[in-house]
Image (cartoon, rainbow, N blue to C red; front, side, top):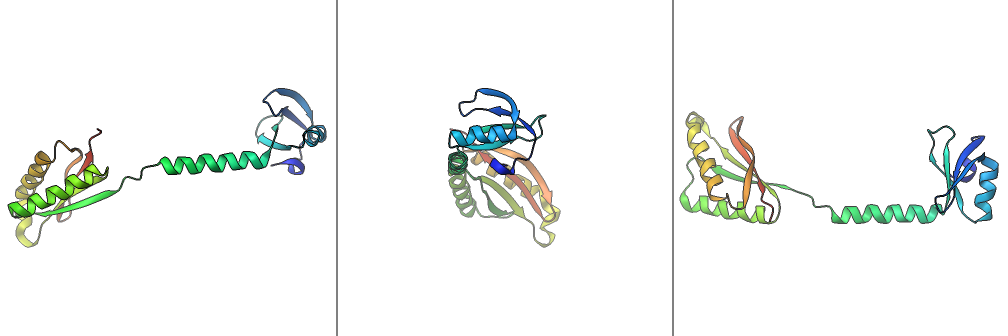
Length: 165
């Protein structure tokens, strides 16, 4: 709430430099803000009496928006990339999948490695577990296992996070 929107009888007033001006009536606080060509802004409405500060509200909003934009810019969105294997994958295909997984980890993304079981392959789930362990051993220098091997329906999956450099 700013300026005329403040309906309280008394407010605790903070000056533009952060100095305490004491408890004054809201009309007097508004007069002091007008004298300095600034706005009266309620910063702590739940306090008794509410705390108001004399400040340039437009400049304050601009700085908040600028800070928020800077925070968004510095934020790294971590995506989860998936590498799908099968329990009877050939060596060359496996190496291609490993290269893809390494590339994802180097880009800073998490990797979900999954083995899909078709038909009766699910009876030999140990082959899928062995395949995931082999993948983990090959990719070990680029990432570490975040979530271990787990069955999800007809899929067996594990998550690998990139190592910090």
